[in-house]
Amino acid sequence: AVMRQHGRPLLRDARHTRAWPVMGGCVTVIVALGLLVRGQSRPDGFDSVIDTAVVASFSGHQRILPWLALPGSTVPLIAVSAVIAVGCLLAGRRNGFVLAVTAVPVTAFLDDRILKHLVGRTHLGMLSFPSGHAASAMTLATVLGVLLHDPARPPATRAARAAVVVAACAVTALVAVGVIGLRWHYFTDTVGGAALGTGTVCGLALLLDCS
Image 1 (cartoon, rainbow, N blue to C red):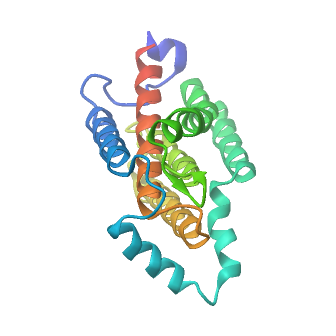
Image 2: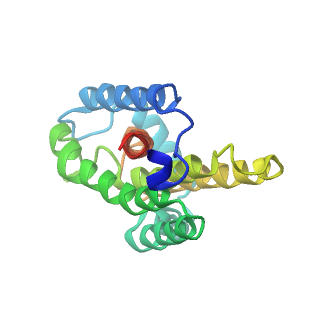
């Protein structure tokens, strides 16, 4: 029924896919870090080491930091999501289209409206856990991972598809460096954001395949 209504499933087998343990791991990371940093208004010892190193590394290159953080901002996120959505429509993957247009908004809602208020961690007076920039960037990287990890595609394109996903994950890492260097977030905020983006996409893909 799923294939007739939406085209190929997003995941190989909704009951046995690796998306379940991945999503469970993401939830575990978010809960564990959220409890660890709940109500904090300063970095812990681990954050201090990482954050200090990142800030020091870019002490003479401050102008590059906003560019590193840019892919996690609203306009680039909308543009990339739209390109992915159009590609899914052209490929006849309506479930992929739905995933592409809903993933970032759902992640942002969970981040800004729920988790940040539940955890209550602040950075310079602003709620910071999880990082919305890192979460959104990782959301798109995971969307690409789900859509491109497709057994129906030619095996000859496997390396190219893997390279696209690796590049998207690398962009997420650069976004994390940018927001840490700009002193918008602590390192653990970005880890929580990456877990949120990954887990949200896995959950949405499972829902779409089971609907």
